[in-house]
Length: 171
Image (tube, rainbow, N blue to C red; front, side, top):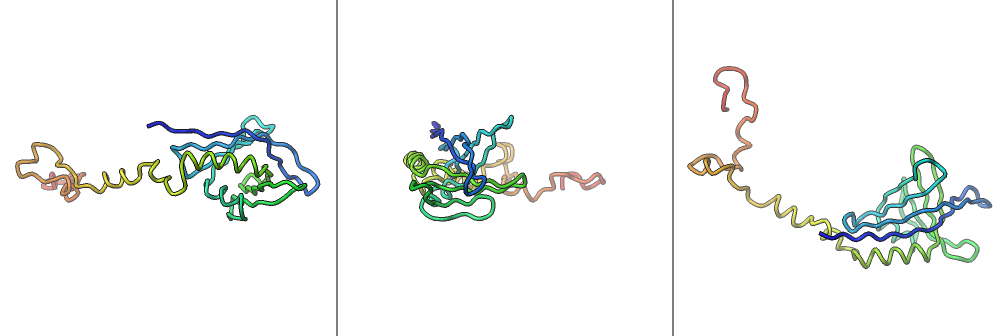
C-alpha cells in the first residue's frame, strides 16, 4: 500500500521570556500510515534533534482554540499583530514554549487533512479489516484433525504444557 508523507520546514521561536526568544528550525511531518499523529522535530544546537509526537487533532484544534493538558498544550494568539500558535511542551527533561506562525501551520495541516480527512484515519490503518479477520471463525488446526479431532476453537481446552507426572501427558 502506498503511503503519503506531508512535511514542512519552518522556523519556530523558543520563548525564553516575554521579551526574549530564540529561533529554532523545525520540521512538521505527517504520514498517512500513522494518521492520528503529527511529528515535530526541533533542530537545536545539541547532537541529536528533539522529536515530539502528538495527536494531529490536538494541533488542528489548537489553531482555533486552547486545547490539551499535561505534556502538550496548544493555543492560538497574536504576537506583534500576527497570528501564531503556541505549543507548551513538558517532559522530565524540562519545559518549552514554542511559537509557530499560524498561517504556515494551518496550510500544512490543510494538506494533511486532504491526504487523510478527519474521521477516515481508521480506514488508513485497516482496523476494520483486521478486526473482521480476528473475529472470524477459526479454521481447523490441520487436515488430520478433520477426522473428528478438535477444532482450533477447542484447542484452548487442552493443556499446552502437560505435567511431568505419569498420566498427565496429553491432558
